[in-house]
Length: 409
Image 1 (cartoon, helix red, strand yellow):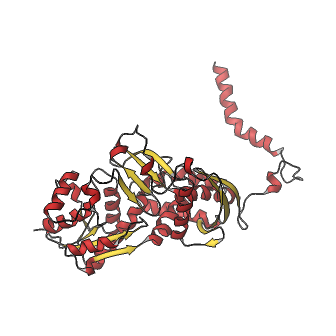
Image 2 (cartoon, rainbow, N blue to C red):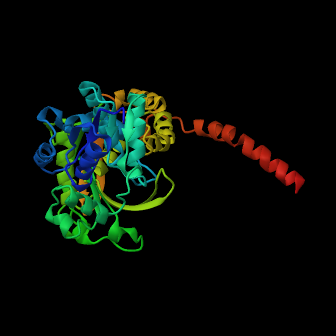
Image 3 (cartoon, rainbow, N blue to C red):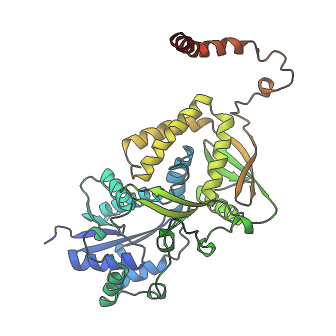
């Protein structure tokens, strides 16, 4: 007899998690609480409530929450303060959503007295690691049920058969073969994996992309956008103050309109395999470019270089599920300290897949001094003779080594 009497399930209302809900009831004979997060995936979430009710879940055990503002404010924006990119390309759209889901699973478990949480991530993917590392960091004694590591329903056909046997509603999409891709969407991105994309030599079909037009089909006229930053975060677009979620929503629309933010990537998964995925991150692509531009004028050179040195480590922490780790928190503290001076505006031009910075300034924190940087007469602001000593001192070790090599050759 299992000691698990109640479990909180991360529930989308789709085929997989609907099967998991019924499987938990039958296998563990436990009470199930469902949690469905609105991360901006653009889907109607009310059907998830209705499906949960059909399985006998009482209304008090169904949690459907709009976490879009929290997602952007407390996860996406802090990540972009570090200019975070994984393996040189990936903007971590899936990875950054998992810590928030893990946090709410643990909070709801505590609220409802559940002993366990459950998720629908497969044993092949990264998400199982992200969910579970986050959960254990927040509650070291929580029990975790990962059905894909326990059951024998390891194919779509078996899932369908189980659903039909237990009266689980299966929509027409799944009856006709399902989507040609495994997709994940939130306010930062949408990802596509599987089926056609499992051949890394095959170009993704144009019909796959949902958020953006191709650069070839983008408008022939460029669009200019003024982006205002306060302490490293975007607070206004074209002079209009916006909340974090509103910022990302508008940037997604503008970026998608101009064919910005598409990525075709073979990444190295945490579990050891290489995986090909395609991503649309139009808003995030604009944020990253604009944030680097405002930092270029406000950050001290060595601080900026230190951030660049640390960024790959920070990106790996997020990708590998260590958002709640002490090292990520410590590094975030350093990053956020640097952002106190990152205030000002950036003007970008959006044109056929490109984000082009065309201007930037800060009324309060600009380190750019035109009287020093000018190619015209600087009226003594910079003594060019100083460079000779600086160069000789830095060349000293090189000259010593060269003299030794010449002596021994």
